[in-house]
Length: 494
Image (cartoon, rainbow, N blue to C red; front, side, top):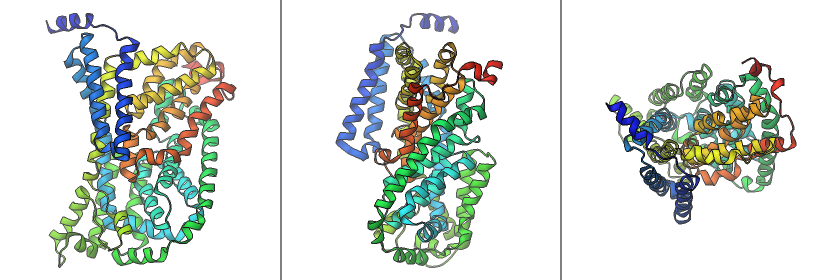
């Protein structure tokens, strides 16, 4: 009986028109623009979330007009938010990891040694290369940013460098490494969706990825050399002394980071890997930073309960530094699960909006409307790129920006005699790398929360992420390194 009722209900559903599909999108763009105009970088503290939910409400009204059932839409929202549970858990654990690693002295040790080793003139280019090497080895841009990236942000403050440019260099390097690593989930997902082979896909990406990262590195080098005079005025030694007074610094404090890297290299799931890293940091705090814990919990003497209290607080509330130096205190007063709640709020609201417009068929309708505009190979690649970026904006999820366009354009590429690895390359060149440039996207929200720099603030300096789509589209119009289907043996055999 229930099946029959459901069938009758679905048969009466009307397909959304292009105009109807555009209404919630235009509404969202207007509200987001207004929220940024009114609140600037603080728009993500609540205004953007309201914009997303109101726009979802507008889409729901259109869905109700077209006889869509609320129960079905509710299931789609639950499914969409459910798919982000892993990302939410990772966000919470990264918050805990930052808090416990500051208390354990791991982050202070990274800053301490980094201030002595890294030349300020080459800091930005070094940060990018270091994150690229790390991400290639472990296959995760998130883990790279949450470990090496946090330390580099601290080093940048100690050197008097720009946190926005530093965040851009970290993200550029992390996403280059993630994109080129066979251990990365997106690097495996893109060829799977497009129908190409993993290592053929990676080799094909070299042609677009290496020019983009080379230009990015040159830009970071130029910026760093130009900033040399301002950096020379910073008294680095005073900051080293403060760190030495506040924590018992030693190279052994870098072991928690090594544990995380080893587990990531062994392809352990991200959530337990980062959680174990946070707990190892707590253990190191108890063993090596008892004086810091006493100051943190404001206790007069060492007890087991005080040790437990300090570690527990760092995991859920982050570390609060009180050295008397405002700059250092601002740098080290970070972390904890609490610090990620605003980011999680943003992610849930964004996924709600994306799930609604996807369930109502609006997302597919918008994509279908532009496919016929792709009359040449160049315009097809441009259309694919714009679709990936658009889905990143509307659906707020990196994986959807790869899967949805991959499914929709796979047959079109085949019809035009283009090898599947062309499609998988575009998916990575645009879907993977631009996700971090959207404040309400899971990737953009994660990086802003982890690095402590607003998305729109670091966006202009993510040179690799900006250049990668441009190079990919340029190759399409030049018909350079665009492989025909007969040259792609694995796909033909498939």
